[in-house]
Length: 297
Image (cartoon, rainbow, N blue to C red; front, side, top):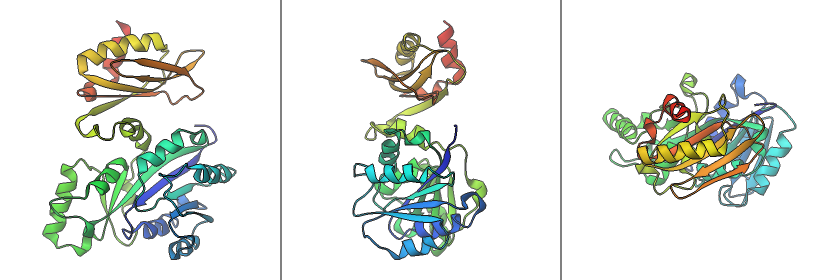
């Protein structure tokens, strides 16, 4: 991605440890000189003052949740910050929906200037029951690249072990303990898959639990909408698919594609993300090789 700045998302419930995490991140070399955008319901906060000790600049969006608002103030700040190549960290309120926030970013051209590097979610172990994690927290954790489990050291060892097992059973494979903001940074995974999750779950959040998905990199392929529509019809019937979304390109043009069993839509675009997300009952079975073999038939 040309001339892109690193963008990081931090979310978690009130009191989970987001600010403590921010203070730790800002002292690491890769976050040096970062600007922070904090979303607070109050115009001023003690947290902002703490973060300002380490951040190059702190901007606050106060009074409303950034995922529920129009997003104009956030996008305006990101445009202003894009004048520098320093990384930017967005810290959401404890009630923010990360997928909605990412959809706001996708809906503008702001990701032409930024590359989403990592989505963090801080999960307070003391707010979780060993038999059940609150659904709102679970949805946010599933949208993140890494889940940082705070205050886990305050649980009895057996309860801590049971909680970890519960999180694994709910599909959270990258859960890392966090102690006063510090965690094992070798557990960070690259690249971020937050954009893919937004494409997958954005409009289908209520049905996403029963779906699987596959992400196909089409950067090296010369694909037209007519060709992809033909491939989609075949795969849709064979694998029980219900949605396809993404960008393709031929030698002279790029298109944004959205497809369901009932319609196939293509629009010319300047974006060149060169990936498509396929969603459906057996979508996870569609590998890169299977997809391109179908194109050759």
